Amino acid sequence: MDAMQGRTLGQSGISVGALGFGCWAIGGEWQRPDGDPLGWGAVDDDESVAALRRALDLGITFFDTADVYGTGHSERILGRALRGHRDEVVIATKWGNLFDEATRTADGHDATPGHARRALTASLRRLGTEYVDLYQLHISDAPLDAAAELRETCEELVREGLIRAYAWSTDDPERAAVFAPGEHCAAVQHGCNVLQDAPEMLELCAEHGIASVVRSPLAMGLLARDPGAGGAGDTGWALGSGDIRTVPPAWLHWFGEGGLPVPEQAARVAAVRDILTSGGRTLAQGALAWLWARSPHTVPIPGIRSVAQAEENAGALRYGPLGEGEMKEIATLLAG
Image 1 (tube, rainbow, N blue to C red):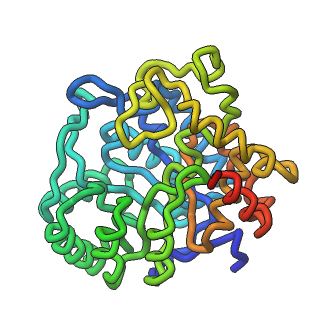
Image 2: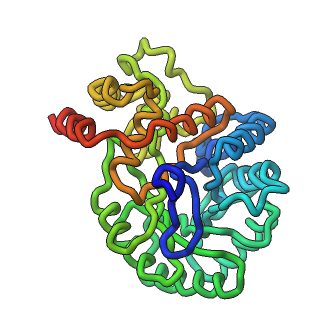
Image 3: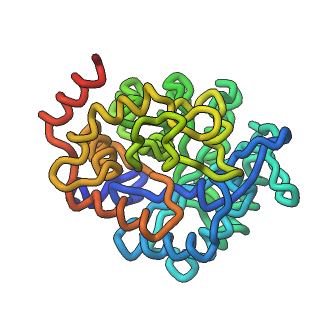
């Protein structure tokens, strides 16, 4: 299969396109117990469904969600949009976070095998499907001994026909290495983008022959829009209430209080903008092209919540990866 048209998730035999659809944003508003937002603000469910279906029309077949996104809402919308197309798509979801659908609040984790099974049953119901293609542990820092037990639970779920393969969503290579040797481990989901490389994780994926499912490929939107100066006068970056970027947690490096880009990060984008947008690409398309050039194992899953975003991201497939010279130039500019 042409490298830009498909990837195989590990040894699972599950084929996906080189680009996926991240479903965090379509979950709508949800929060921490203290009220800080965990979503991307209010959404239009009809627009979300239209975006999902447009993506499918454009050849995107890999859809990544989690039970906690919108405290179940993302899974429900995904199930609604893909009804009647189950055999055409690959669905990935995640488990491990605890939440209350009634109050749209997430609070705590549960790394026990019993919860994995309960969470899967609930996800299957919300998604309207009898199986999940890729089931992912969503506790990034789960203890290693608990993770080893959960890996065996996932193997049981594969044997029972409830999932086809599994992965861990974590940025810690040591933890990813616990799952990676599993017979039906097909991927690791981790952060990576032009501004924040992940060489150890990409090496692990290559060593074990598993897919690198890349979250935050557009740095939470910083690589999808021209960041300008990134200062207080940059009104083009004003974000609405209920958007996690306005009250960024510690791991969200690209935005500061109020949702404005961190000036240093905006400056780094500006330094490589001309290379990323060369050849007619948009900034977002160039950022995706960087990931494809970075490793043949990558499957970026940019967050999408509009038809326009689906079309722009899918358009990156026409251009393919950046060239070797462009990659070297970007590395030099960002190393300075």
